[in-house]
Amino acid sequence: MRGVPPQKAQQCLSDQSAIQRLVDMTNKASQLGVQGTPSFMINGDLVANAASWDALEPRLKEAVGG
Image (cartoon, rainbow, N blue to C red):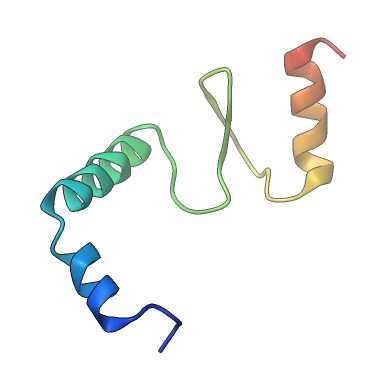
């Protein structure tokens, strides 16, 4: 329905190692405080309220010393 052939979708859904990697990434993100997308981390810190460029740009400049 979304452009993925049924055989390819079934192949992805049956790949247990890929599923475990996804579960592990989701758990780690949750532990870091990520609650949704978009989320950004700069130097290991989760940037709050950075869904717009106006909010994110100053934090990026600060991180690179600019």
